[in-house]
Image (cartoon, rainbow, N blue to C red; front, side, top):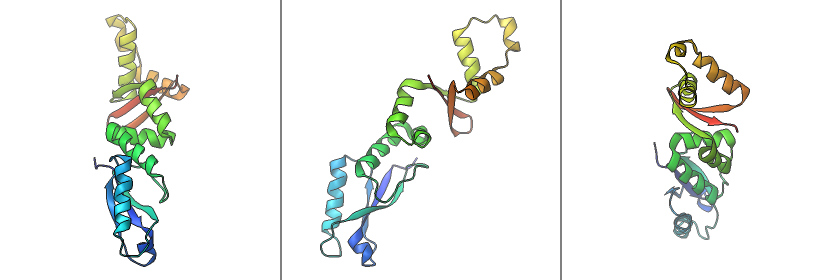
Length: 169
């Protein structure tokens, strides 16, 4: 996975027809990010450069930002993705809120499974003493689908047979 980076453009230079800016590691300390932007603006090819905007970014998976996104939000999102990878990005998109995504991981995450039926079987066998002769009769696939359709759980897929299960309670 690509390190979350942002491209900050000098708007004075951009308005003068000059592409000038800097790529910054979005997981750097927020004060360092601001210092890098200040240094970029101070060395602008256009006099009195003061304004900047986000003109590009990478490593944020499918998350989208506006050119006026706050540096703090970009930094916090980048750190979350750095820590949780694609799952973090998908959770952020699911909730469109960083705090809710963090809460889901902390309070409602049940783990990664290859399928809903794998989760249902794992959960059932861990919480219930089922006699061996009855196990072949349990429809774990239907059980997992029922839990998801009822809203008891929701899933985030991050790849082939990479299904992350979360509870809604």
